[in-house]
Length: 278
Image (cartoon, one colour):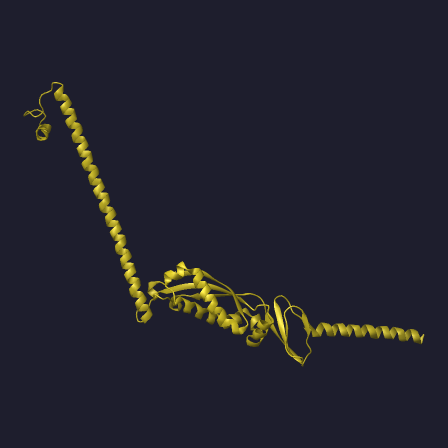
């Protein structure tokens, strides 16, 4: 009887020990996911866990989670914040940047050190990088005219991407792509005549507008004159045709025994014209 009770007690203790071990493993063993990696620091040094897991012991270990999702950041530059181009024009631009922490141990470690848990919060991460992206847009826009940006969007995006990627490289982030959503000239009302750059751009813009107005007016007037000349030619041609037909009729009548139309009192409406023709 005592031996049976000892066996039962041993089984209970073993089951309890297994349960405790399973609970400890579940509690102490941390796994990463596709969206979140982590870096463990403390005893045994740093360990980057991107795909898999690691034991994390309280007090002696510390972990920093790193978000691995792609972040979309929209940069809008318009109004008094619009970009100043090489030709001193202002460009209103809306661009979208896609960035993420690449699945590389070095990048994850760097992101954990420089950004910490902010990689898990898109809004906080946006605050960190959007200034760098805006600077990249301004730097490239200053090297290209507004027409060049419009006609060579691919080159513009490529240069912006290169500069932006370099500016965030030390954070562990990497730029995936850059896209232009919209591009337009800033309304002339937004130009500040007291600003050196704006005054130059305003002068060029005013000249362009006035030249286009003059060109449109020249085209309109030339078209009007061409139409009037054509109408006049048509009228003159019609008169010649009518006169020719009348003369042919009178000539036909004369040859058939009718009086001479040049004689006074005979067809007075055509006598003078007929004599003039002879």
